[in-house]
Image: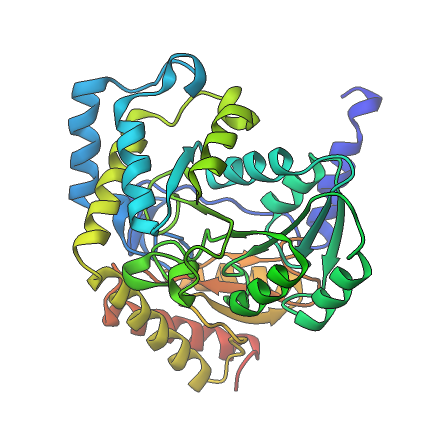
Length: 394
């Protein structure tokens, strides 16, 4: 290897020494409550497939139907020749589902953040960002020449103080926050954020990636959850989690959507969402509009798992959602815990630095509406067995 490229081996060796090197497992089956890895079945407790739609026959069937009608690829960016009528149908359905005036879809939730932040802000502007915001928000902020001001996680006093410090600033001001913080499962204090933002004349954007299909009536998201329709300027989301598919969404005013359609670089310079993705997302929205049972089942499963693990002595943090973080501590210990769970038939990945702060490495247990109570009992038994072996619980 050329000398100039040697840094990669050095960095990989460092990651291995510090327990930060990831062992990426390969699935050999559809995403579901149980998955096949290496020819064996494992209870799946680390997928974002909240509502079990990733292998739902209604979702898969819609994708097959639309492939026969439209083919597979869009063949171009949206602004040249890649906009199909099903893209517009999905956007209309999503806007209606979200209770917004309009919506636009992108290739992923990551792309949606990259579309919003650099398009709405630039040189001379300010961005106020929660200190625990997702990497996609952080990267989106890096793509703009605006100054980024981080406020302490969900600390409304710190947010207010930083807004007051910059009250006389002449440029645009954007406040952006995750709706549900994916590593801890806590929910942004949106009512308070909105009140403060309105007082200071700040644009508000919320990335609802882990709230779509989870919070609100039938999974309509954090804005619906708090009854804040018409007061949140930009709703950003993803269809790769509860929807079980792929794609990003931005919902808001018709003017916002028109502005992004004309100026957002991920819309102008990257090909449109594929036909099977669009079709499958259409089916997912239709299922959620028809019944809130999948969302209720998700919450029931989340409450059960969290309560059982807490009762057994595990530190499950302060999650307010079905996300269940099981705090282990050091990175290597969390990786060892994950490996032993795997030996016990449970697939639950360790989350370590830099995804979470050092010393807070964890197993993030993710339930789905597809899990049965018996599935979750089996999972708890494995956690208890490994926890006692490793001295995490007594």
